[in-house]
Amino acid sequence: RDSCVSDSSDSVISSGSDTEGQIYKVVLLGDHGVGKSSLARIFGGVEDGHDCEEAGNTYDRSIIVDDEEASIVLYDVWEQDNSQWLKDQCMKMGDAYIIVYSVTDKASFEKASELRIQLRRARQSENIPIILVGNKSDLVRSREVSVDEGRACAVVFDCKFIETSASLHHNVRDLFEGIVRQIRLRKDSKED
Ligand code: GDP
Ligand code: MG
Image (cartoon, rainbow, N blue to C red; front, side, top):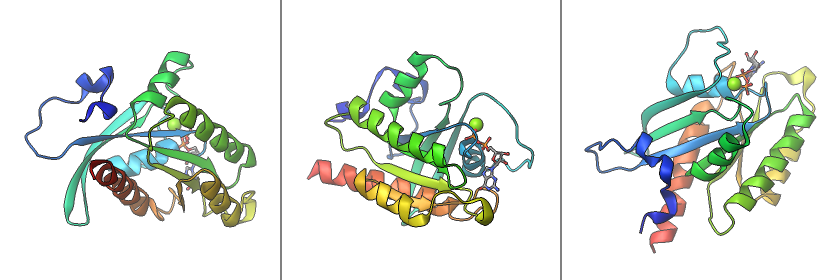
């Protein structure tokens, strides 16, 4: 009955952990420069300060949400190369998605909508958890996308919404807890 979440890429991470919990694959999507890797590094606990321009990374971590442990593999690989194959894989493999734009970059906001549409197309019948993230909320003076615009977009696209600042670590924890809660909610409703 888990067939809806498994695919060929499973072998990479399903190396028999003995915990009862499942490992959730969470994929970061979004334009270049919006802060995906910064958010991913905070999640992964990598706090080395400088921006490493590494092409792609995955972060493997367990977090406690509502007194229950959740194992997550976070994929920051969307920009790893320009192959359509990788992009297709990204669209297929996630149990949940974090679509990031920068509140200082209107074009990245429009790109987020595009990604949402692509995702819907790729996973038509599935009800996949998605959180739309407006990052760089600390950059007040250069803001181009208002909170209301972000929120309205999330309503249209039937997903959750949060603004974050990776620089200030603001709301980053809430973001990852939120994604775990979303995954659990949808999973429970499927099992009923
Ligand atoms: P990616 O291309 O989406 O992976 O974006 P990065 O994480 O590499 O971030 C791009 C640039 O934006 C870097 O210089 C970051 O330091 C900066 N950045 C990321 N998040 C924030 C944020 O919340 N606030 C500010 N002011 N800068 C940020
Ligand atoms: Mg990056």
